Image (tube, rainbow, N blue to C red; front, side, top):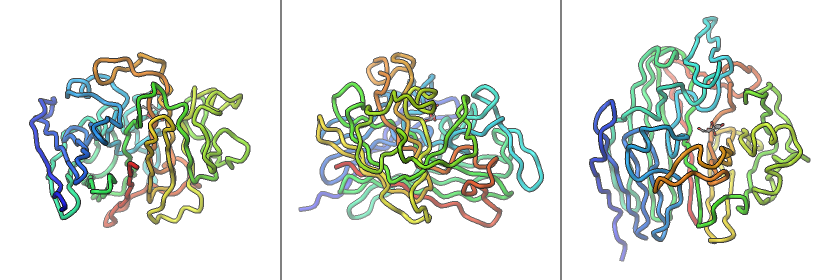
Length: 346
Ligand code: GLA
């Protein structure tokens, strides 16, 4: 007998912009995903009752200082060097929130907005569609952007994220999800085995802004084409990992063609849990939670350990608006931006 998926909506506190709802999606196996209308955040993924993400159990945590746990990041995920770019001959200055650069859409990125949310269910899946209107000039970006993020949780423990956006003036868009995965009880992800189908990576300068090069991963710590322990090269004598204090780099998917492809696998040898990732995006920012232990808090008011989670931020390359050689992030009037990422728990 199949048990239909269920959705529970719960009022989840008050953000500065308005009330927040949490949607708990439960599949036929009884596994759950919880989505917030605040930041279109993945607040929790529970498999066999075990939490698979870093985050908080109340809204206050997300309203306070946190490293984007579970959040939808936009209008431009990752960094824009000098917090400026030129589009159609006009220079746009966007909100600088990391020194003179912009990180993750600026001070009031999409992760801190209250989205309109609408749950839905079909035979073997349940989901939530979230909508946001980002005004012309929002954080400095041109054009009114209408964004839609749809989360679908299916009976095979796959969380599918579909993004769509349209604009009324040419603009730039780079959307991602910033979930920190933690697949078991181990304090860090150092023993996890990671595989990423990426043959090149994007080196960055000391402000984590791309130098403009796209380099082969061969004989670098970034070569995850064969399964490799996350901790193996995390403190390698390589200037890129030394500067970032670990992995915090955009890995370019091999033979990228925009189709939905399996690109990454993370396996926790201690719990036996694994996570498989598919995306239509050209890159995955692999981030190993390099912050010093205790810089941020997480569930239970516990200090977030260094290397306590791993993010697979599927997206375009950082700072693409300033690099003509990178795949374009320009969204033109009349076009629709579409992208899909799937995280399946196994
Ligand atoms: C991304 C960045 C990191 C860090 C986190 C926190 O992964 O590349 O440097 O800022 O986000 O949001």
